[in-house]
Length: 189
Ligand code: 5GP
Image 1: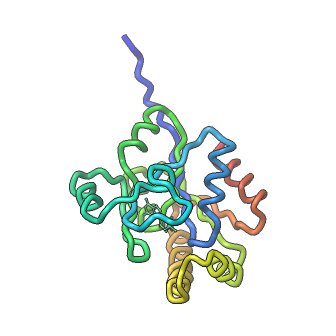
Image 2: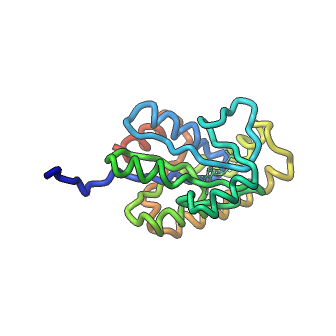
């Protein structure tokens, strides 16, 4: 009889304020390890260099709601006026195959994942300082002044929420990119 393995892959949840550089960090860690990055669904519009199916699955509100009704999301949350969600099936499939998967999501979503997967390991990415966070957000030239203020307010709230949650076992300060990537890789491996 075929022996079934009960061993599951590892699930990492990377959270941090926008402007902390977490997306770039995660991509680099995935390039240098066996881990893969989950592709989220969102109702926000694609940015200039973003590709459907690679950066996100860009969905209409109607389709996003259908996914919610059909219980397709492992977690979903409203972040800055848009909806974001992690598709359940690809994550569960990879875990069953004993693969390592990284979710790069906000803290509200992270908490939902931890309630379904208490074994998941949370990693909080911090920007070097408040001043640097503001500089990074302004340099992206993607957001209006009002949006930047909202993002800074959310950043402080998000950091507090993550620091108060025992599932966030690691904190990485992204003041030196190469060192931060190495820290992330060490945790994953
Ligand atoms: P952005 O629009 O800048 O790509 O992402 C905005 C925020 O949404 C970031 O904090 C990012 O981590 C978060 N986010 C991206 N995908 C997901 C997801 O699937 N679920 C949740 N809860 N947050 C997400």
